[in-house]
Length: 149
Image (cartoon, rainbow, N blue to C red):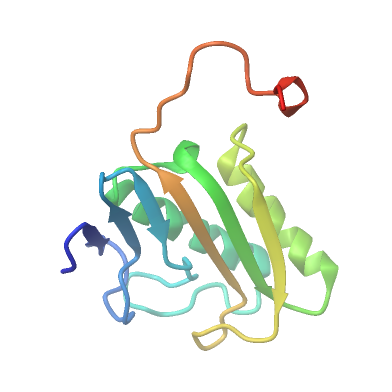
């Protein structure tokens, strides 16, 4: 292990992938996840042909990786959602699942149509950057229009 980097491999997720599911940096607050794939614990792609079903599995795996790294959905700074498609309706189907999973926490996200992803029959992948043990300053939410330049 490299000094200052903690690689996270949750026990409940597939051990067949050749990477850690998340990484945490010194001073131990930033969490960078690998793209969460729609794999079951045995490494099999689930919900073949079903974008929304794969998005649900990918988000579940993402949450497991975040929690194993000491964070959760409310700690996410940004997500990227990849969908194998040429149809915007598939992008929307995946996004609706991801958005619902984060509830009121509407962190920035990028939604990308892709030609292929890494696992057989994989249509969706979701990655995130989070801050564990995030701290929020008391007071009203930040409004960029009120910031002094």
